[in-house]
Image 1: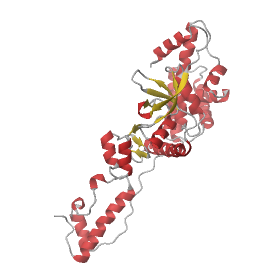
Image 2 (image 1 turned 45 degrees about the vertical axis):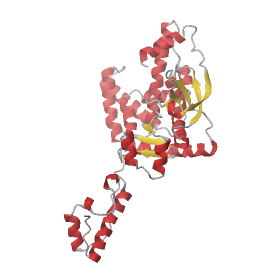
Image 3 (image 1 turned 120 degrees about the vertical axis):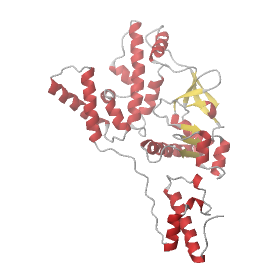
Image 4 (image 1 turned 180 degrees about the horizontal axis):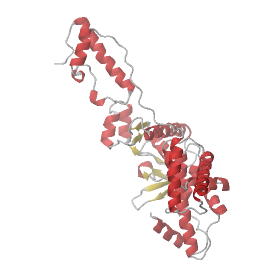
Length: 368
């Protein structure tokens, strides 16, 4: 829903007074395969749910990761099902690393659900008359339910009658209180919530009311006045969120100081009291350079495969001359994960063992 329709929705809701009406909800048992995550939520990660049958087949080694990835078109996604979580993002990238962190968290929560059920139900709202729902809050809990019980299972959800008026604000309230959400995710969640509150303020003004005070805005977001000021400063310039996205590890307080100092230096250098759009663009460029210079956590390169073996000169000659993919090793090279050092090392060892065996019995290791 775009900003204009959000404002129209809020105008209609505020017709009877300055406050939004209460939103009705009930608790229902809903099948997980009818629930859709919110791709704009800071908790979202690109997952594809697999059937319980396919999850069971993978666990019992009747289907491989690469076969599942091909079947579900999962390149760049995470496959999730009962007792299965497979990271199919590009190995070693920042997104791959972040997905692994989320996977660890979801697996831990999923195992807790298996032992003691879920204490707090995720919240959803109906999308259409076809029985589909979209998540408001509780994305991590939803993914953990998929991992714990499978796509074909049902679970208890808190269900709103319709889309909440301040959906992004509700999501921020949940996300801001979680320590495991990344700084980038929190900044994105705050920007989305403030977009809604701006729409609410515009609707209030059009109806002859007043804008929310800073204290009221902070209260709706569930944060202190100090935290509200921190978020406001940190979301003034896109370079801040982009730096956190690529691995900046500085605290919000430290980066806020960098932003305020940069603004102060710019005003002093150019004799500016008020900053216009052009000034803010220049400051954003300055911040991008400053924050890029700060030590950031770069994704680790894939570990090098260590090989330790000895071969006769004859076998070395064979190894260099022959296409080892045609050797009768029993290895399915098409199924080998070339990002998995252990798999590669095991496969090479099998080739070496075959060549060494060929040395001893003077046999040709080529099939056929």
